[in-house]
Figure 1 (cartoon, helix red, strand yellow):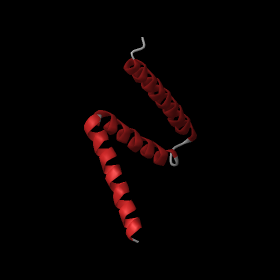
Figure 2 (spheres, rainbow, N blue to C red):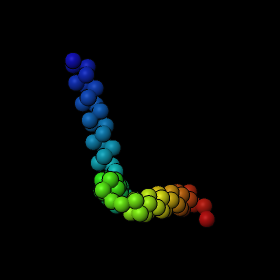
Figure 3 (cartoon, rainbow, N blue to C red):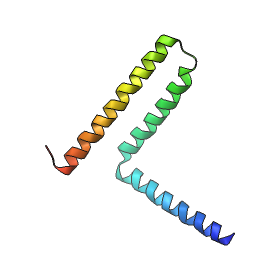
Figure 4 (spheres, rainbow, N blue to C red):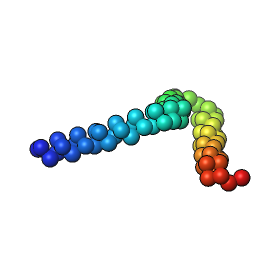
Length: 84
């Protein structure tokens, strides 16, 4: 039991250190990720109750958001690498 307790304590310390680094280092990014998760959850819940036309619009909206995020990550990585 003591090994399990020690392992769990180590995991907790590692997680909190990682989390604190995210919040302190790139607070804007972390907040944006949380906003994206909340928005995703809200639209998923709404998806069940809306009509078919709205469902198609929600799917299209998320396709655009997903592609925009992929493009933004690619652009940021390219800039950080120093490529034009």
